[in-house]
Length: 192
Length: 387
Image (cartoon, rainbow over all chains, first blue to last red; front, side, top):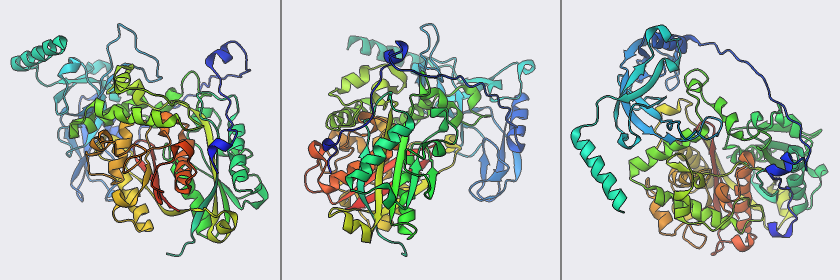
C-alpha cells in the first residue's frame, strides 16, 4: 500500500472560518474548582516554607536527602526516616528565559521575561532540585552552575506555599572582572 | 519466550491539520476504515480494539475512550484505552501486540486519535495540570519550560549550539514535503529557525512541532493470519517501555535513561546487540528538534553527546547511513499527540515494505525502529520492526 494512492481524511479549517461563522461551533468555559490536600510530607514542607525554611527527608537505606520531602522512598520502597533542614541556597542546574505565559499568551513589551530554573538545593543530595524562578539578575549573567539564594516574602505575608519564596537571586553580585568580560563580549557582538 | 509472532498488515492515516472540521470520532473513523481497507478486512474480522488518545482536557470530553469507541470500530468488542502522554502512539501498537502475542486475538485493530484544537484558543493552557499541583503549579509553568530547561541542560553539558540543533528542524520539515499527511512541510534554513520568535530561550518557534488534529490506525495479526492477508507482513520483533520518577527536577535532564531502559527491553527481545549497525531506519520522537538528538542517544544509535555531530555530517538524512525521521516527524508532519507515534510506526511499516514512495530510503532497509516519549519527561516507548 502507498499513502499516495489514498484520499486522506481530515479537512483543514482556519480560525477565520470560525470567526466568520463558515462552520458552526459550540463553546463552553468550564468553571471547576479544586482544593488539594497538602498531605503528610508536603504539608510539613509548606509549613516550613511559612517559617522561611526548606525541609527535606532522609532515607537511611539509599542515603539520600530528598527534596521535596516524601514519607516513603520511591527507590527503596520503604518508609523514609528523618526530617532535615536544607539551606535556602543552591546551584542552577538549568534555566530558561521565557517570553510566554502559562497559557501560551505572549508577555507584554514592558513585562520582563520569566526565568524558570531547576535549582539543586544545598544540603539535599546531589542533583536533587526543585522548579523555581530567578530574578534580580541580568539574563546574560546566568550560567549553569551559578550559586543562588532564596528571596523570601515578609513573614507576615507568607501563606505556606511554594510562592513564599519569591524567587532565587545570585548569591554574590557579579565581580568586576566578570562585568568587564561581559562588556567586552557585548562590544564584540556589536562589531559583528 | 512463550508468545506468538505479531505482524502489522494494514495502516490508515488522516491528514494532520491545525484544526479539522471533522469531530474526533469522524477522524478516528477515517483512519480506521482506511486501515481495514488497506488489508481488505471488515470490522467483522476484528477480534479486539485498542485505542490511544492523550489528555481528556484537550477535548473537554471526559471518558474519551468511550466517546471515541464508535469511530474506532469498538462496539460489542473487547476494547481498552491506554494513555502515557506523548509516548501513547508507540504504546498503542505495544498494547495491541499483547492481545495478539498472548493468543487472545488473531486480529487486533489499533487506533490513535487526537483533536487538540477544541481547546481554544490554544491547547497549551491544558498542560498546566500535568505539573505537581502543590509544589509547581503555583509558579504558573508552561509545558515549554520543561523542554527549554532540558534543552539548555543538554546544550550546556555537551557544548552543543542552537545552530547544531536547528539542523534537525530543517531536515524534518524538508522530509515532510513528501508526506501526504503533512501539516508543516517546508524548505527552511538554519537562520530561519534561529530568527524565529523566541518562546522560552533556548526554544524558538521553529524548534517546536505544531498543535494538530489527526488520527492513525493499524491492523495487527497473528503469524498464521498475517501470511494469509499479505505477502509483505512487517513483524513487531521487539517492544519496550519504561517510566521514570515524576520528581523530574531531581533527575539527570541531559540523558533520557528511561528511553535507554525501554530500548534495551526491545533490543533484547529482538536480539539486537549493536543497534547503530542493525537498525537501518529510525523514527525517534521529535516534538522539539533537540529531542530527536536526545532520543538517538537514549536509543544507543550513537554515543552520548554525538547526535548533533552525526546530524551535521548528514548521517541522518534520507540517503545517509542512518535515515532518521524520513517521514518528516512531528516537526514536519505534525503532532496530534497520540496519533504522532502511530504515524511513525506506519512510516517504518511502509519503509520496510518499500512502499514509502518519494520518502523511500535507499538500500532496502530490513530493520527499523520507532520511539516516543512523554508524560512529565519520564516515559519511553520503543518498537523494533523487521520485514
